Amino acid sequence: MTRPARFLGIDIGTSSVKAVLLDENQTCLAEGGAPVPIARPRPLWSEQDPEAWWQATLAAVAEARARAPGGELGAVRGIGLSGQQHSATLLSASGAVLRPAILWNDGRCGAECAELLARVPDFTVRSANVPMTGFTAPKLLWVARHEPEVFSQIAKVLLPKDYVRWRLSGAFVSEMSDSAGTLWLDVAARRFDDTLLSACGLTRAQMPDLVEGSEVSAFLSADLAAAWGLGGDRIPIAGGGGDNACSAVGIGAVQAGDGFLSLGTSGVLFATTDRMVSLPERTLHAFCHALPGRWHGMAVALSAAASLSWLAGIAGEGGQVGGLIARAEAFAADPDRRAHAPVFVPYLTGERTPHNDPGLTASFTGLRAEHGLDALVYAVLEGVAFAMADCLDVLSEAGAAPRHCVVVGGGSRTPFWNQLIADTLDLELACPRGGELGAAFGAARLGMLCAGGTEAEVCTRPPIRAVVTPDRHFAGESAARRRRYLAAGRI
Image 1: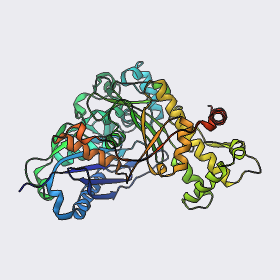
Image 2 (image 1 turned 135 degrees about the vertical axis):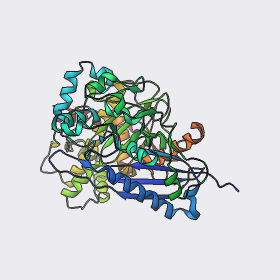
Image 3 (image 1 turned 90 degrees about the vertical axis):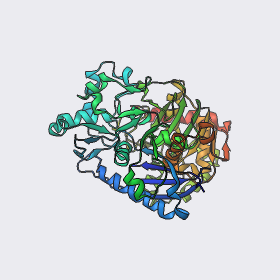
Image 4 (image 1 turned 30 degrees about the vertical axis):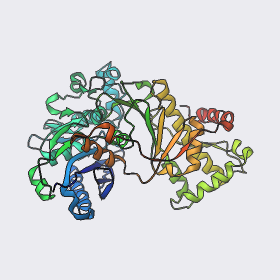
């Protein structure tokens, strides 16, 4: 008797690798995870050993296998991969890792970003994005300048999930959503651009092949299939996607106008489009989606829930924010106190959208003696909402504002904050029911698609537990306070 098919999703995150095992109904049968250390050998540097990704992948899959009932991993018929974007993994012709991977949150290559614009005058037209230190291309210029002996040996440049794919299959393959974040892709045409590669001293021969995220990219090696107890035919590995694109697949944000707002450490506003949208002068991220014929626009505020955690630490709450939010909600119930609260600009680690300036700093303005901790917490929650409104303005200017938006991330579990953001953005937010499996879940869905599933069957929206409708009662007050925020945050 043939066993029902199972599907494995693996997400190569910055702090950990996660694996999820789904059944044919997308019920999670088991999860596994393993941490990945980050090295910061110098100021602004952030690096990881690619071998650590591989060992964490093996550990995460082993844990999922151990937790799965009745040897369910053996019925896997498709695998999907997701991963942190931009991180530069450099391999020699023999497959040796030439140096630790330079991560997306590494800030060493600011000068190289300016150099790319000088080398290619139409760079932002070709790449549809403005160079930032997080992206891959300036990292390679930095290596060429500071580590020429390493640069001269580069045979392949891979992103994290694609390095893991190579270890799983022996194939050098990527896909368009992740590769768009290298700055070497013609995003509209969904292929590498020789001029952009040449600006970094690279050629297409040093790039992986490209497939769509839902297509078969490679097959699991026979040795690993045997070690994991997988029987049957060769197991296909989907192209997969960058972490945000996979998260979008996981919540069914796959048609034009679908989007999500993520309240994690950073704040992300993501919108699916049926064409490439570009606004590099406003730091819009213009990337391909993980599904054919679709793209996405993305705007990022660097300190969202991180701002609240920072204040909790200052207040001696040890990172416990529930009580603080309750105090802010009680404070906001008094319209006069709310109107006269201080204004917070959440640039604790600089800002990306719309300023692209790591040197920007956070601030409270309008502080008075009568303001206590409750006023400060309210200001932080509101300041993050204002930052997300900046993100929505950029997407709207590009013609890519989401029409249907799901709110996810740790901050999304706070009804008061959800309402404040909905009011500030004048945008309806849908709150999904149940736990979040995030990018690994979306990766597993791509594994289902490459094994023969259809988008209509696989990429459904999650059940919604609540819909937050904007309350326009405070619209005038909110607009006035946002003007104060914009003045305080002006460069």
